[in-house]
Length: 133
Image (cartoon, rainbow, N blue to C red; front, side, top):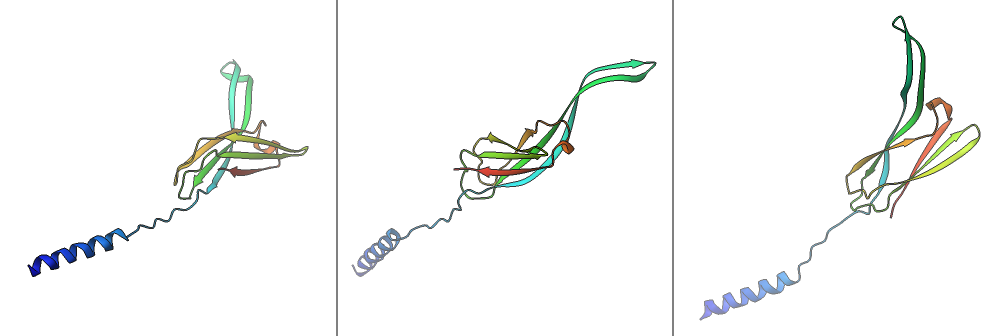
C-alpha cells in the first residue's frame, strides 16, 4: 500500500513539473544583405563579313550587366524583397527597382541587371540597396 502511494505521489510530481515546462526558441528577424556585385559585358554578334578568311566587318550589340548576390543571414523568411539599383553617370543618377521572390533563411540568390549601357566604363559608379518586409 505504501509503494502505491509513493508511485502515485511521484506521478503527480512528474505531471506537475512537466506541465510547467516551456521551450524557448530564439529566431532572428530576416536580414537580407548584398553579398557581392559583379560587373561584366556581353557582346551579341548580329552580322559578320569575311574576306579571304579575315573579318572585315562586324555588327554587334554590347551590354553592361550587374550580377547582384543577395543573402538572407537572418532567421526568418524575407518577404517582398526589392532591390534598388542606382546608376551614376555624367548626367546624374537613374534608379530602378527589381522585385524578387521571398528569400529563405540562409538562402543566396543572384539577380542579373542590365544597366542600359554598352560598357562598364560608360557609367561612373553604381549603388545597390535592398528592402524587404
